[in-house]
Image 1: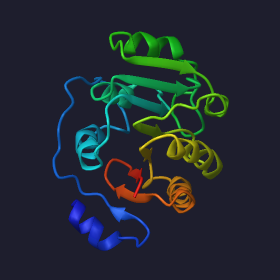
Image 2: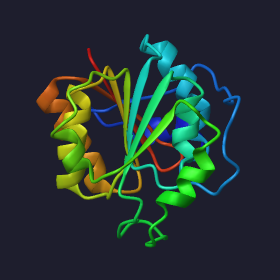
Image 3: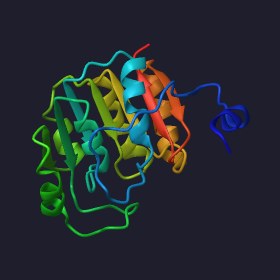
Length: 197
């Protein structure tokens, strides 16, 4: 099913469908399996459409680093926060910080932090140009981490809005709380896009 058919059949009044005006491959990406594959093509469109600066990006939920490297193409500094131990929604449950660190070592603008998001958000008061939330796909965790991200960034992305109803519900509630505008890109498991009005 094409994106136009999807939008016509599944439009929700409180979520505006996101249709990219252009697709663009990043200069660098990782050749690994990732549920994020395909979303890398719309990041430049999002940045241009919402007039985002390209200084600071934070990502919660790095896993093996596919999306982290995508962001490293467009931002001067990318911080990736993850426990690197997987969760109930990931296939890999083993500790993989060292493996991911080595994979991302060639990217000097990426800084990985081995931490639970809860510990990080209580100490970080930085304002980011973009935040990405792709953690355990429960309502409470997505809401808590996502609300912090929305309050500390110009644009917040949420992966898996199509494949996990709890993620979609949390993102909708964050949009209501912050009064930000919510878009949804339905492909590749869904990407919620929350921006200041």
